[in-house]
Length: 491
Image (cartoon, rainbow, N blue to C red; front, side, top):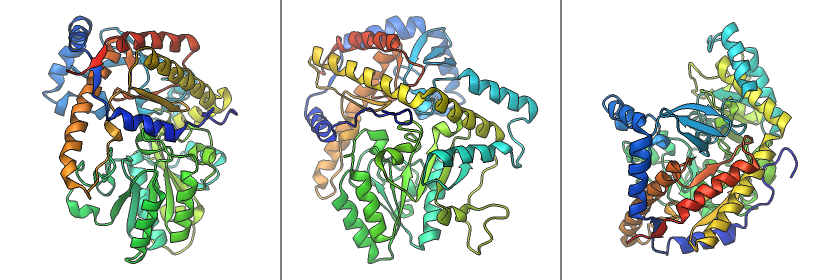
């Protein structure tokens, strides 16, 4: 592993898929009811009283009591007031190991002083936003382009969702085609056209409540890892105007929850070239976490467009952007542009490329380079995953643990491993019932982890950062051991 690469060994995806197939055939293993009750009474009620009181007030002015989907936790969300390195602290003063990492961006760990000092300096001199050009817009774009070969130009936006929206607009302008094909189960933000086939492959529009079905007229999904299915759709679209773009998460849907074979991305690239579609890599999570050259550098692929988020602002607000080859990025030109006569994609945002985001992003990437943070985070991911596998074996549980560098997965119920087969509609109600039931138990497991001082993403994904040490991971595994010792088949 060199200092630009966060994966020491690519996982055996075929073996993992077999394990996940077996997992969803098993009865549900989850935290025992009496153990969950004990956590609720002894931890949440006694040690998280201030959080509970604040959430009880918040529900009157905030729908559901929280502003972010990831903030929900059984039996009630906790209120976090401090983040530092590998730790989080709640309003009651309880300390936690942070494996949520704000959804993935904080590869250095939370609130690193080197970045924070530069942000404070910027706030003292300039303030967070002017609406005009700032030198760090250039410096950040140059830094990203220097690391990622396919990114000849970069346009900063407000979020990964916005960047995905921009990508499909650029693709349609560049190719003069309309159809978009995405990987089933992958998440490309919550815009109308891309809220299709999310979480569960084959789910189509069923998870997109509030979006009229006609919005998906030009959106399709293909089964993850299945090049034949993708080519069938590309071939079909060629008969009705062609495909503008194929969007994929390069390690698999939901940040690799359903992992892909190593050569899969190369196969997608070849099909895109064959059928004249732009290849769009959604690297919101993987860019600067899998490696400093992105997942595309690791897999040896040259996408036409790359979606960024998370780490490009170092965990600060305004984390999003679109990068790519000049021939396509020209459709995002502002101001003087390139001088060519062409239509421009409708893209904007008052806070896009604000000085605060650009300064934070530049110095985050700079510090990651200097400290080999990607490699260090990946080593911690390996250690955590190895330890989880040993605990699974020790307790004779059907759980599945694997990682792609610092992106770690702990599947206890396999909720996202289900798929909907529309050729067998009689099975769909069973799939929906099973995923709903398993999601609830995933929340119960997540509540047990939280009570043991471990913050995860939805109880099934853990991001490691460069702030972790061997001793911290050892302590984390002791806590997981306590939880696993209280697991049994659901009655």
